[in-house]
Image 1: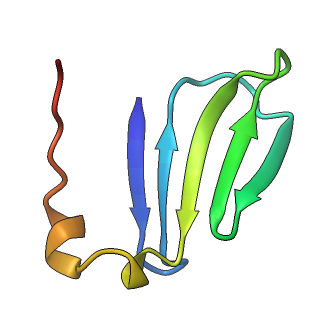
Image 2: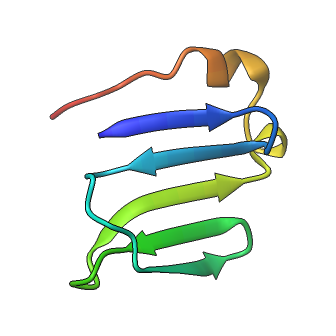
Amino acid sequence: MRIRVDKENDSLYFRLDESRIVESEEVQPGVILDYDEHDQVVGVEFLGISSRASKEELSSIQFQTA
């Protein structure tokens, strides 16, 4: 899994695996899902993140496992 913050494009991207992306769909305004050839979600992109989180929140992402 990879997480990328793109300050230039004001986006946050979660890549779940390295499968080839064959389709993308904006499911809500500013939320894009990337699908592989088996219609499995392999990536999630959030646009306009500067309006959703502060710079401090984006600079220290915390991971939780259960």
